[in-house]
Length: 421
Image (cartoon, rainbow, N blue to C red; front, side, top):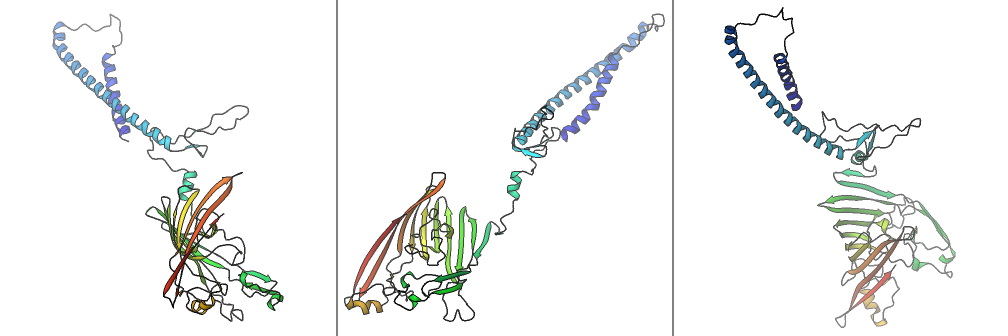
Protein backbone atom coordinates (compact mmCIF):
# COMPACT_ATOMS: atom_id res chain seq x y z
CA UNK A 1 0.00 0.00 0.00
CA UNK A 2 2.91 2.39 0.74
CA UNK A 3 4.44 1.75 -2.69
CA UNK A 4 1.11 2.35 -4.39
CA UNK A 5 0.66 5.66 -2.52
CA UNK A 6 4.19 6.85 -3.47
CA UNK A 7 3.66 6.04 -7.14
CA UNK A 8 0.30 7.84 -7.16
CA UNK A 9 1.98 11.02 -5.83
CA UNK A 10 4.93 10.84 -8.21
CA UNK A 11 2.99 10.33 -11.43
CA UNK A 12 1.33 13.82 -11.53
CA UNK A 13 4.61 15.53 -10.64
CA UNK A 14 6.53 13.70 -13.37
CA UNK A 15 3.81 14.40 -15.95
CA UNK A 16 3.72 18.11 -15.12
CA UNK A 17 7.49 18.39 -15.31
CA UNK A 18 7.63 16.69 -18.69
CA UNK A 19 4.85 18.87 -20.13
CA UNK A 20 6.53 21.99 -18.88
CA UNK A 21 9.88 20.99 -20.37
CA UNK A 22 8.20 20.14 -23.71
CA UNK A 23 6.57 23.55 -23.94
CA UNK A 24 9.87 25.27 -23.37
CA UNK A 25 11.71 23.20 -25.94
CA UNK A 26 9.02 23.17 -28.67
CA UNK A 27 9.54 25.80 -31.43
CA UNK A 28 6.72 28.14 -32.35
CA UNK A 29 4.72 27.77 -35.57
CA UNK A 30 6.56 28.75 -38.72
CA UNK A 31 5.23 31.80 -40.54
CA UNK A 32 6.26 33.44 -43.79
CA UNK A 33 9.05 35.90 -43.58
CA UNK A 34 6.72 38.71 -44.66
CA UNK A 35 4.27 37.97 -41.86
CA UNK A 36 6.92 37.59 -39.18
CA UNK A 37 6.84 40.04 -36.34
CA UNK A 38 9.41 42.76 -36.46
CA UNK A 39 12.53 41.94 -34.55
CA UNK A 40 12.69 43.54 -31.15
CA UNK A 41 14.94 46.42 -30.73
CA UNK A 42 18.30 46.17 -29.09
CA UNK A 43 17.10 48.01 -26.02
CA UNK A 44 14.19 45.60 -25.45
CA UNK A 45 16.42 42.51 -25.92
CA UNK A 46 18.87 43.90 -23.42
CA UNK A 47 16.01 44.51 -20.92
CA UNK A 48 14.32 41.08 -21.11
CA UNK A 49 17.25 38.74 -21.79
CA UNK A 50 18.72 38.57 -18.22
CA UNK A 51 15.33 37.86 -16.62
CA UNK A 52 14.49 35.04 -19.05
CA UNK A 53 17.90 33.48 -18.63
CA UNK A 54 17.54 33.52 -14.84
CA UNK A 55 14.08 31.89 -14.92
CA UNK A 56 15.27 29.28 -17.40
CA UNK A 57 18.23 28.47 -15.19
CA UNK A 58 15.98 28.07 -12.13
CA UNK A 59 13.63 25.82 -14.09
CA UNK A 60 16.50 23.64 -15.19
CA UNK A 61 17.73 23.31 -11.63
CA UNK A 62 14.26 22.30 -10.46
CA UNK A 63 13.96 19.73 -13.23
CA UNK A 64 17.38 18.33 -12.30
CA UNK A 65 16.32 18.08 -8.65
CA UNK A 66 13.10 16.31 -9.64
CA UNK A 67 14.98 13.90 -11.87
CA UNK A 68 17.35 13.08 -9.00
CA UNK A 69 14.40 12.51 -6.66
CA UNK A 70 12.73 10.32 -9.28
CA UNK A 71 15.88 8.23 -9.62
CA UNK A 72 16.06 7.78 -5.87
CA UNK A 73 12.42 6.74 -5.75
CA UNK A 74 12.94 4.31 -8.62
CA UNK A 75 15.88 2.74 -6.79
CA UNK A 76 13.79 2.45 -3.64
CA UNK A 77 10.93 0.89 -5.62
CA UNK A 78 13.34 -1.62 -7.17
CA UNK A 79 14.64 -2.59 -3.73
CA UNK A 80 11.09 -3.02 -2.41
CA UNK A 81 10.14 -5.07 -5.47
CA UNK A 82 13.17 -7.33 -4.98
CA UNK A 83 12.18 -7.93 -1.36
CA UNK A 84 8.59 -8.69 -2.39
CA UNK A 85 9.72 -11.05 -5.14
CA UNK A 86 11.87 -12.93 -2.64
CA UNK A 87 8.96 -13.17 -0.20
CA UNK A 88 6.67 -14.39 -3.00
CA UNK A 89 9.17 -17.07 -4.01
CA UNK A 90 9.44 -18.30 -0.41
CA UNK A 91 5.65 -18.35 -0.12
CA UNK A 92 5.21 -20.23 -3.39
CA UNK A 93 7.82 -22.77 -2.34
CA UNK A 94 5.98 -23.47 0.91
CA UNK A 95 2.37 -23.48 -0.35
CA UNK A 96 0.81 -25.94 -2.83
CA UNK A 97 -0.38 -24.59 -6.13
CA UNK A 98 -3.99 -24.83 -7.18
CA UNK A 99 -4.50 -26.35 -10.60
CA UNK A 100 -8.14 -26.58 -11.69
CA UNK A 101 -9.24 -26.71 -8.05
CA UNK A 102 -6.72 -29.41 -7.06
CA UNK A 103 -3.70 -28.96 -4.80
CA UNK A 104 -0.42 -30.20 -6.26
CA UNK A 105 3.11 -30.47 -4.98
CA UNK A 106 5.64 -27.68 -5.51
CA UNK A 107 6.86 -27.20 -9.07
CA UNK A 108 4.57 -29.97 -10.30
CA UNK A 109 1.51 -29.45 -12.44
CA UNK A 110 -0.63 -32.39 -13.54
CA UNK A 111 -0.91 -32.60 -17.27
CA UNK A 112 -4.38 -32.04 -18.68
CA UNK A 113 -5.61 -34.57 -21.21
CA UNK A 114 -5.16 -33.40 -24.80
CA UNK A 115 -8.25 -32.15 -26.58
CA UNK A 116 -8.84 -33.12 -30.21
CA UNK A 117 -5.31 -34.30 -30.75
CA UNK A 118 -3.74 -31.12 -29.38
CA UNK A 119 -1.92 -30.87 -26.10
CA UNK A 120 -3.38 -27.96 -24.19
CA UNK A 121 -1.19 -26.32 -21.53
CA UNK A 122 -2.31 -26.77 -17.95
CA UNK A 123 -4.01 -23.76 -16.42
CA UNK A 124 -2.07 -22.79 -13.37
CA UNK A 125 -3.63 -20.39 -10.92
CA UNK A 126 -0.83 -18.65 -9.01
CA UNK A 127 -0.90 -18.82 -5.28
CA UNK A 128 -0.10 -15.14 -4.85
CA UNK A 129 -0.44 -11.90 -6.80
CA UNK A 130 2.65 -9.86 -7.54
CA UNK A 131 0.84 -6.60 -6.79
CA UNK A 132 -0.78 -7.86 -3.59
CA UNK A 133 1.33 -10.79 -2.40
CA UNK A 134 0.38 -12.97 0.54
CA UNK A 135 3.25 -13.39 2.93
CA UNK A 136 1.54 -16.33 4.67
CA UNK A 137 0.21 -19.42 2.85
CA UNK A 138 -3.52 -19.84 2.70
CA UNK A 139 -4.68 -23.24 3.95
CA UNK A 140 -6.05 -25.31 1.12
CA UNK A 141 -8.41 -28.25 1.20
CA UNK A 142 -5.68 -30.85 0.88
CA UNK A 143 -4.11 -33.62 2.87
CA UNK A 144 -2.50 -31.26 5.38
CA UNK A 145 -5.83 -29.67 6.29
CA UNK A 146 -7.39 -33.12 6.58
CA UNK A 147 -4.71 -34.20 9.02
CA UNK A 148 -5.02 -31.12 11.22
CA UNK A 149 -8.81 -31.07 11.28
CA UNK A 150 -9.41 -34.82 11.38
CA UNK A 151 -11.68 -35.71 14.26
CA UNK A 152 -10.52 -38.39 16.70
CA UNK A 153 -11.99 -41.86 16.68
CA UNK A 154 -15.58 -41.87 17.95
CA UNK A 155 -14.63 -44.77 20.23
CA UNK A 156 -12.41 -42.47 22.34
CA UNK A 157 -13.25 -39.58 24.63
CA UNK A 158 -10.73 -36.74 24.31
CA UNK A 159 -9.82 -34.74 27.43
CA UNK A 160 -6.95 -32.37 26.65
CA UNK A 161 -4.08 -34.50 25.38
CA UNK A 162 -5.57 -37.60 27.02
CA UNK A 163 -7.88 -40.08 25.31
CA UNK A 164 -10.16 -42.42 27.24
CA UNK A 165 -11.23 -45.55 25.36
CA UNK A 166 -13.86 -47.83 26.91
CA UNK A 167 -13.56 -51.53 26.13
CA UNK A 168 -15.43 -54.74 26.73
CA UNK A 169 -17.76 -57.29 25.21
CA UNK A 170 -20.63 -59.59 26.09
CA UNK A 171 -19.66 -63.26 26.08
CA UNK A 172 -22.73 -65.51 26.05
CA UNK A 173 -21.20 -68.98 26.09
CA UNK A 174 -22.72 -72.44 25.75
CA UNK A 175 -20.46 -75.21 27.00
CA UNK A 176 -20.94 -78.96 27.36
CA UNK A 177 -18.71 -81.80 28.55
CA UNK A 178 -18.91 -85.55 28.32
CA UNK A 179 -18.24 -85.77 32.07
CA UNK A 180 -19.64 -83.74 34.94
CA UNK A 181 -16.59 -81.69 35.83
CA UNK A 182 -18.56 -79.03 37.69
CA UNK A 183 -15.91 -76.31 37.34
CA UNK A 184 -17.86 -73.84 35.23
CA UNK A 185 -16.54 -72.47 31.95
CA UNK A 186 -12.95 -72.92 33.15
CA UNK A 187 -11.78 -76.52 32.93
CA UNK A 188 -9.99 -77.88 35.99
CA UNK A 189 -7.51 -80.10 34.20
CA UNK A 190 -6.47 -81.82 37.44
CA UNK A 191 -10.07 -82.61 38.40
CA UNK A 192 -11.44 -84.46 35.36
CA UNK A 193 -13.36 -87.47 36.76
CA UNK A 194 -12.46 -91.00 35.76
CA UNK A 195 -14.88 -93.53 34.30
CA UNK A 196 -15.12 -95.44 37.57
CA UNK A 197 -17.01 -92.55 39.20
CA UNK A 198 -20.56 -91.30 38.86
CA UNK A 199 -19.40 -87.93 37.50
CA UNK A 200 -17.38 -89.78 34.90
CA UNK A 201 -20.56 -91.25 33.44
CA UNK A 202 -22.61 -88.02 33.60
CA UNK A 203 -22.45 -85.30 30.98
CA UNK A 204 -23.09 -81.60 31.65
CA UNK A 205 -24.51 -78.65 29.69
CA UNK A 206 -24.61 -75.00 30.79
CA UNK A 207 -24.91 -71.38 29.66
CA UNK A 208 -22.79 -68.58 31.07
CA UNK A 209 -21.98 -64.89 30.57
CA UNK A 210 -19.28 -64.80 33.25
CA UNK A 211 -16.51 -64.27 30.73
CA UNK A 212 -17.95 -60.92 29.63
CA UNK A 213 -15.46 -58.07 29.93
CA UNK A 214 -15.65 -54.43 30.89
CA UNK A 215 -12.83 -51.91 31.22
CA UNK A 216 -11.08 -48.92 29.72
CA UNK A 217 -7.65 -47.67 28.65
CA UNK A 218 -6.17 -44.20 29.02
CA UNK A 219 -3.49 -42.89 26.62
CA UNK A 220 -1.64 -39.67 27.33
CA UNK A 221 1.70 -37.87 27.14
CA UNK A 222 3.36 -36.51 30.28
CA UNK A 223 6.70 -34.64 30.09
CA UNK A 224 7.47 -36.28 26.76
CA UNK A 225 6.72 -39.78 28.04
CA UNK A 226 4.00 -42.01 26.61
CA UNK A 227 1.67 -43.11 29.42
CA UNK A 228 -0.80 -46.00 29.19
CA UNK A 229 -3.31 -46.84 31.89
CA UNK A 230 -5.26 -50.09 31.48
CA UNK A 231 -8.13 -51.60 33.46
CA UNK A 232 -10.03 -54.80 32.68
CA UNK A 233 -12.37 -57.02 34.66
CA UNK A 234 -14.77 -59.93 34.19
CA UNK A 235 -17.47 -61.70 36.22
CA UNK A 236 -15.59 -64.84 37.25
CA UNK A 237 -15.16 -63.75 40.85
CA UNK A 238 -16.42 -65.48 43.97
CA UNK A 239 -19.37 -67.65 43.09
CA UNK A 240 -22.13 -67.86 45.72
CA UNK A 241 -23.67 -71.25 46.41
CA UNK A 242 -27.08 -70.25 45.07
CA UNK A 243 -25.79 -68.40 42.00
CA UNK A 244 -27.67 -70.58 39.52
CA UNK A 245 -30.89 -70.89 41.53
CA UNK A 246 -32.64 -67.65 40.59
CA UNK A 247 -30.64 -64.50 39.96
CA UNK A 248 -27.43 -65.94 38.44
CA UNK A 249 -25.50 -63.12 40.13
CA UNK A 250 -21.94 -63.60 39.00
CA UNK A 251 -19.53 -61.34 40.88
CA UNK A 252 -17.13 -58.86 39.33
CA UNK A 253 -13.39 -59.44 39.66
CA UNK A 254 -10.12 -57.75 38.70
CA UNK A 255 -8.14 -59.06 35.73
CA UNK A 256 -5.63 -56.38 34.74
CA UNK A 257 -4.96 -52.97 36.24
CA UNK A 258 -1.61 -51.33 35.47
CA UNK A 259 0.18 -48.18 34.35
CA UNK A 260 2.91 -48.34 31.70
CA UNK A 261 5.33 -45.46 30.95
CA UNK A 262 7.65 -45.34 27.91
CA UNK A 263 10.32 -42.78 27.04
CA UNK A 264 13.55 -42.88 25.02
CA UNK A 265 13.51 -46.65 24.55
CA UNK A 266 12.86 -47.42 28.23
CA UNK A 267 9.63 -48.81 29.67
CA UNK A 268 8.41 -49.17 33.25
CA UNK A 269 5.22 -50.96 34.32
CA UNK A 270 3.56 -51.24 37.70
CA UNK A 271 0.35 -53.02 38.62
CA UNK A 272 -1.39 -56.29 37.88
CA UNK A 273 -0.94 -57.75 34.43
CA UNK A 274 -0.17 -61.01 32.71
CA UNK A 275 3.12 -62.43 33.93
CA UNK A 276 6.05 -61.57 31.69
CA UNK A 277 6.75 -65.33 31.62
CA UNK A 278 3.53 -65.79 29.61
CA UNK A 279 4.32 -66.04 25.86
CA UNK A 280 3.94 -62.87 23.81
CA UNK A 281 2.68 -62.30 20.30
CA UNK A 282 4.61 -59.04 19.86
CA UNK A 283 7.73 -57.95 21.70
CA UNK A 284 7.28 -57.66 25.46
CA UNK A 285 4.06 -55.67 25.22
CA UNK A 286 1.86 -55.74 28.33
CA UNK A 287 -1.38 -55.17 26.39
CA UNK A 288 -3.55 -58.34 26.47
CA UNK A 289 -4.02 -58.34 22.67
CA UNK A 290 -0.22 -58.76 22.30
CA UNK A 291 -0.03 -61.73 24.70
CA UNK A 292 -0.32 -65.31 23.45
CA UNK A 293 -2.74 -67.07 25.79
CA UNK A 294 -4.25 -68.99 22.84
CA UNK A 295 -7.63 -68.56 21.22
CA UNK A 296 -9.33 -71.08 23.51
CA UNK A 297 -12.64 -69.93 25.01
CA UNK A 298 -11.85 -71.96 28.13
CA UNK A 299 -10.93 -69.48 30.87
CA UNK A 300 -8.17 -71.85 32.04
CA UNK A 301 -6.92 -71.72 28.46
CA UNK A 302 -4.73 -74.68 27.56
CA UNK A 303 -2.89 -77.40 29.44
CA UNK A 304 0.85 -76.73 29.40
CA UNK A 305 0.55 -72.95 28.99
CA UNK A 306 2.50 -71.09 31.71
CA UNK A 307 0.46 -68.08 32.71
CA UNK A 308 -0.65 -65.98 35.62
CA UNK A 309 -2.00 -62.50 36.27
CA UNK A 310 -0.31 -60.94 39.26
CA UNK A 311 1.11 -57.72 40.67
CA UNK A 312 4.51 -56.90 39.24
CA UNK A 313 7.09 -54.22 38.52
CA UNK A 314 8.50 -54.57 35.03
CA UNK A 315 11.49 -52.84 33.42
CA UNK A 316 12.04 -53.17 29.66
CA UNK A 317 14.69 -51.76 27.31
CA UNK A 318 14.05 -51.34 23.57
CA UNK A 319 17.40 -51.04 21.72
CA UNK A 320 15.46 -51.13 18.43
CA UNK A 321 11.93 -51.55 17.16
CA UNK A 322 12.47 -55.31 16.77
CA UNK A 323 14.41 -56.15 19.93
CA UNK A 324 13.44 -55.93 23.61
CA UNK A 325 15.00 -57.03 26.91
CA UNK A 326 13.15 -57.03 30.20
CA UNK A 327 13.20 -58.01 33.85
CA UNK A 328 10.13 -58.34 36.05
CA UNK A 329 9.71 -58.63 39.81
CA UNK A 330 6.44 -60.45 40.43
CA UNK A 331 4.32 -61.60 43.33
CA UNK A 332 5.55 -65.04 44.50
CA UNK A 333 3.61 -67.95 45.92
CA UNK A 334 4.98 -71.12 47.50
CA UNK A 335 2.24 -73.07 45.79
CA UNK A 336 2.11 -76.80 46.38
CA UNK A 337 -1.25 -77.57 44.83
CA UNK A 338 -4.24 -79.23 46.42
CA UNK A 339 -3.06 -82.64 47.63
CA UNK A 340 -0.57 -82.77 44.78
CA UNK A 341 2.54 -82.78 46.96
CA UNK A 342 3.15 -85.55 49.48
CA UNK A 343 5.13 -84.32 52.47
CA UNK A 344 7.31 -86.58 54.60
CA UNK A 345 5.23 -88.51 57.10
CA UNK A 346 6.95 -87.04 60.14
CA UNK A 347 6.49 -83.48 58.83
CA UNK A 348 3.11 -83.79 57.16
CA UNK A 349 1.04 -82.38 59.99
CA UNK A 350 3.57 -79.66 60.79
CA UNK A 351 4.06 -78.35 57.25
CA UNK A 352 0.47 -78.67 56.12
CA UNK A 353 -0.86 -77.03 59.27
CA UNK A 354 1.57 -74.10 59.38
CA UNK A 355 0.50 -72.50 56.10
CA UNK A 356 4.08 -72.52 54.85
CA UNK A 357 2.84 -73.63 51.45
CA UNK A 358 -0.17 -72.52 49.50
CA UNK A 359 -2.35 -75.56 48.89
CA UNK A 360 -5.03 -73.62 47.04
CA UNK A 361 -7.05 -72.81 50.15
CA UNK A 362 -4.87 -70.14 51.76
CA UNK A 363 -4.53 -66.53 50.63
CA UNK A 364 -1.86 -64.21 52.02
CA UNK A 365 -0.57 -66.32 54.90
CA UNK A 366 2.14 -68.05 52.88
CA UNK A 367 5.61 -66.75 53.91
CA UNK A 368 7.35 -65.97 50.64
CA UNK A 369 11.07 -65.24 50.86
CA UNK A 370 11.56 -62.99 47.79
CA UNK A 371 9.73 -61.98 44.63
CA UNK A 372 9.88 -64.09 41.52
CA UNK A 373 12.51 -62.71 39.15
CA UNK A 374 11.80 -63.14 35.44
CA UNK A 375 14.22 -62.34 32.62
CA UNK A 376 13.01 -62.27 29.05
CA UNK A 377 14.19 -61.21 25.58
CA UNK A 378 12.10 -61.01 22.41
CA UNK A 379 12.85 -60.42 18.74
CA UNK A 380 10.33 -59.63 16.01
CA UNK A 381 11.58 -60.07 12.45
CA UNK A 382 10.23 -60.70 8.97
CA UNK A 383 10.73 -63.84 6.93
CA UNK A 384 9.51 -64.91 3.55
CA UNK A 385 6.74 -62.78 2.09
CA UNK A 386 6.83 -60.19 4.84
CA UNK A 387 5.51 -62.61 7.45
CA UNK A 388 6.25 -61.62 11.02
CA UNK A 389 8.48 -63.93 13.07
CA UNK A 390 8.44 -63.74 16.86
CA UNK A 391 11.16 -65.44 18.92
CA UNK A 392 11.54 -65.14 22.68
CA UNK A 393 13.53 -66.68 25.52
CA UNK A 394 12.83 -66.36 29.22
CA UNK A 395 13.98 -67.55 32.62
CA UNK A 396 12.24 -67.66 36.01
CA UNK A 397 14.06 -67.70 39.35
CA UNK A 398 11.98 -68.57 42.42
CA UNK A 399 13.09 -69.00 46.03
CA UNK A 400 11.48 -71.22 48.68
CA UNK A 401 11.96 -71.51 52.42
CA UNK A 402 10.46 -73.64 55.17
CA UNK A 403 11.08 -73.74 58.90
CA UNK A 404 11.15 -76.83 61.10
CA UNK A 405 9.77 -75.92 64.53
CA UNK A 406 11.70 -78.56 66.50
CA UNK A 407 15.08 -77.45 65.10
CA UNK A 408 14.46 -73.72 64.53
CA UNK A 409 16.37 -74.01 61.29
CA UNK A 410 15.37 -72.43 58.00
CA UNK A 411 15.71 -74.56 54.91
CA UNK A 412 16.02 -72.25 51.89
CA UNK A 413 16.16 -73.43 48.32
CA UNK A 414 15.71 -71.98 44.87
CA UNK A 415 14.42 -73.14 41.53
CA UNK A 416 15.14 -71.90 38.02
CA UNK A 417 13.27 -72.70 34.86
CA UNK A 418 13.22 -71.29 31.37
CA UNK A 419 11.70 -71.48 27.92
CA UNK A 420 12.47 -70.64 24.31
CA UNK A 421 9.64 -70.08 21.86
